[in-house]
Amino acid sequence: MTADEKEEKTQEKWEVQLRKGTLELVILAALQHRTLYGLQLLKLLQSFKSAAITEGTLYPLLDRLKREGIVDAQWVQEGDVRPRKYYSLTATGHHKLADLITLWRQSVLDIEFLLAHPGPDVLPVQGE
Amino acid sequence: MEQHDVIHQYLKQLERYLARLDKTEAQEVLKEIESHIFDALEQQQHSGQVVDAKAILQGFGEPRQLALAYVAHITNGAPLPAGFKAIQKVKQGVTATLYYAMAAFGFSIAFALFFTAGAKVIMPDSVGTWSAGDGYSLAVGFFAAPYPADQELLGVWFIPIATFSALLVITLTRKVLRVLKDNM
Image 1: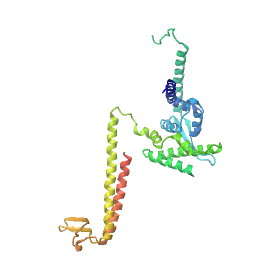
Image 2: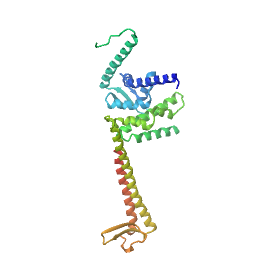
Image 3: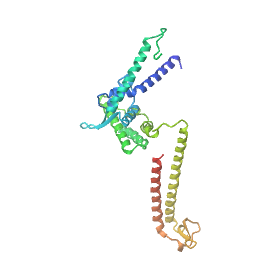
Image 4: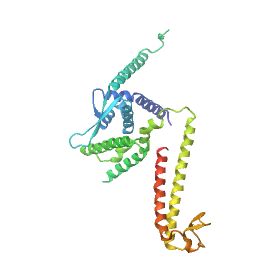
């Protein structure tokens, strides 16, 4: 394996980790004041580079979120088309989203702060 | 047609691997995935792409893996401490052994009963039920040197009785196996 290939692989791993870590937030954000069925949600997520997931990841995750009371699901039949299962956030889901947003924004702020303040200047350490 | 076969086969396999879920829960999962697949197929058709069920199924992954993700909350409701995994494996192994031993036991008895019923048709004098020792012991079977014919108890009735018993044993064995499988 060349150095370039190695670097590419590390980057890919990091992307996978990042996507995994933010997936729940991404799904809740996509369902914010919006009702979508599985295929719609999948296509929406796949249209973003950092949120492209597969069917095999999405559906079991929606199943878990439903069991945890974070999303609600409803079968809807429109006209002659086959019934589709629509997902929306519950009240618990909205609270959870608010919590995740706080964590996410803090994390972005912290990283951005570090990036904006390179060495050799000494940074004040919080709590000291 | 071929596309539909691929889909049905996938859903059938998935259904088998979802056996640990409640029947209604499993049906709900299957219904949703089926709805997704046919929706996605129609979208391919409308947008003039090549209709390819396999490509859609690929996104779902292997049926076994997909089912595992759905049953994960049952199999690891509470994460086990390290080291306990081995114990769980042994327990699973025992259940699997018990399952196959039960199947072998039940079905071989049923086979033996069918076999004697068939043998009675071909060699009526060598097969049957005899009482010996003044009714203290009973011999059922297939003998090279048969007991005196006048002591044979069932005569031609042996055939329906043995066949019925075989069917009963098969039914009971299947019932027991189903219970074992649910607890595997």
